[in-house]
Image 1: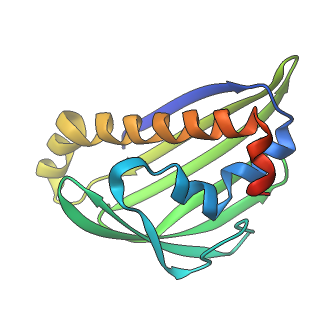
Image 2 (image 1 turned 180 degrees about the vertical axis):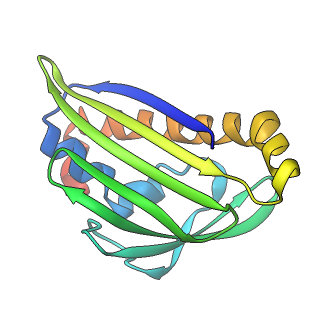
Length: 156
């Protein structure tokens, strides 16, 4: 199962970064050109343990739906979102927040598995891993910019 691990240093306290990371509204605002929207579950505010949302977005020219749930929660250090239904065989996204001298080191560990056996593994290597990494990096950059400005108050 492929792993994407990203580290983002943010000049803001861990609790703020943790809350921004689970903000439905910030997620929608950081989704770039995917036209992402919430079509089920929690549609605004901060996701709490056990809550779920169904997201709809355009990837690779196709409209896709994915339902995820916050399956583990340790405020303000760690939470996990897991896919319940969607186009992948599996998604497990671990979000970690560590205090640093300058603020917070946010770590994403994003595990995923494509369906369709060998064809899915080929797609993972040729296309999906790069696409998902770019998507997460873009989202993290928006989160960083918001957390380091006064705009964070709009989301928390």
